Length: 328
Image (cartoon, rainbow, N blue to C red):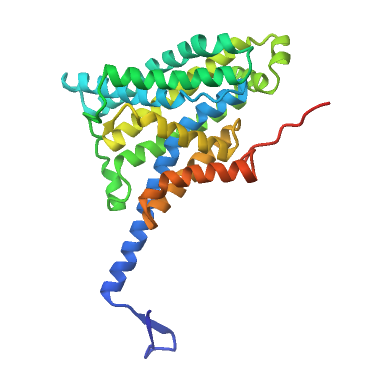
């Protein structure tokens, strides 16, 4: 509690706070900002992955549970490329840019192939068949990477270069946080503009609204579905690369939990809604960060799935989702 005294010059109260209390107050604000930026960082990663979930569901109403493993493959691809380029004398910035590009290209190929092999043959079947296929692909990719690489966590070989002007934040905002936030914001804005204004984006929206009608109007639905998997896989690969440079480690199991949390974010924001996926990711990231920072880190995973259950019970369409109207 502050001690208030009357000043000799006028009647304005003066708050006398000891230097120790001022320092504690400053530390509280610094701690709050650290938690805030941490929540925005993890929320941005969740949003990048959730976009893939929501785009695929919006067009073919499939929950692609193997999407988290694409994120994991992106992290491992970046790890391998960064390790190779690190021995060739490239700068850290060049290595990270090239690693991200290769990871995106490699994982889009995985996403395209996965759609053609595991999902397209089952497109006319009941919803249970592609769902089981997605779970099977998830398990296969996890075990494939575990056998091809290792079951242990591996240290990422390149650290994010220091960004000097961030020193004004006093260490609250790290270079990796800044890069993740800026990259995610740019990607989300570009994706929104692509969906809204480009010919392919309009074709994707038309296919999502009514696939049969879109095909009657000359839209190649198979091409649009493949494009959706390609874009979603690229975003997941980028997220995997960014998180690998942030945490400085990769492992074959990182895709499952991240994928489930991104799915929670998609449901939270309104699955099928691109702005909803972005919002859901940020809300979930902030909720986890503040829970960890002010309560206990043991509950952050519990919180994500409690939020999922609560949303499914009280608002199944999510924050920005809209209930479908059944025409009779």
